[in-house]
Length: 277
Image 1 (cartoon, one colour):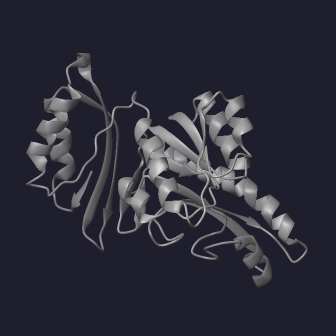
Image 2 (cartoon, helix red, strand yellow; image 1 turned 135 degrees about the vertical axis):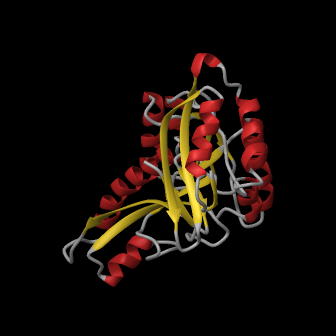
């Protein structure tokens, strides 16, 4: 939840939960003092199964939406988000996502893998996951996105991960999934946005390279940042060395961002993120 900051928010919310026979298992809050904004994440369990989510949500909104100017989301822990995986030709991020999901460390369902190429279809077969090939050209981009939306709707997808999907996502798809499309960019943003950042980093002679997981917006590689990490390089490294080192960062940083999203620990605000631990 988030709302304008004011006195007594935590007390009011915790008292409401207690009055509904709820037991708080986690609570954390953050105040953005420059904007006067309050953020809070609460996890609770129902004592003796006495809480009905629909009723609790309705009563909570009635209680606080006006007095606190409240914006909030409600999730059930046992209802896992459905993740649509988009890929192109690189497999390193895809393998990590699938193995972590299969082991239960990434808490989501993966109903399908979608690609604009067929190179990685064999991985979907290995993991027994449906694979969709939706080719894209400049002339067919609009039709391809209509087909993508059809597939996403069919599988009731909650969020999308671009696991090195090398296509620009248009406003049509972003509007359907606001703050629900996660990309991995192979640089430490805002440095080197766009194509071939490793080549740009090499030409600039940087001493660190990085990777950034972020939500997708209409402005390329400028959405709210979720996670980042870096690796040191030197003048002895060639472009291929940067790419190899960077790919390890990419899969690690993307997976961190996905886990935070699937665990519902991220709040987006003013093109930034509040990430709870």
